Image (cartoon, rainbow, N blue to C red; front, side, top):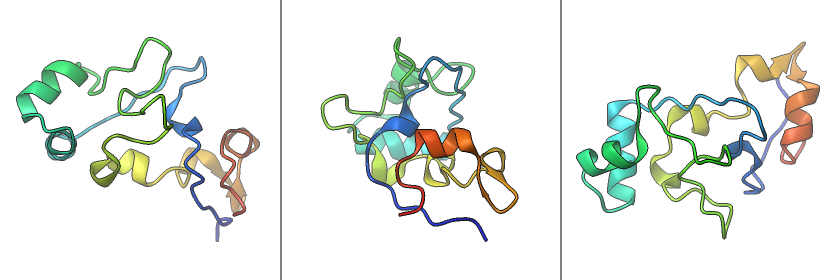
Length: 110
């Protein structure tokens, strides 16, 4: 069993920190996110999606991250990739979180 985790809403998982991050959003997820922003799916796609599925901001952060609050603007409809962080296979080793994800995520162990 992996260690405990409780989100502290710090927003660090939504910022690439100089690393290339691929955020994949399905059509259904994009439609839900669009609703949260009072946009049509077409408007959302034109504004936020590219061939890799989500355009990151110039600073590497997710465009759904509100820079003033560090909270997701579409939290209720966030993609599976976001809902399952930090419990990704790449973040777990020998039943615990890797040092890299421990350094990033202050909610581990909470």
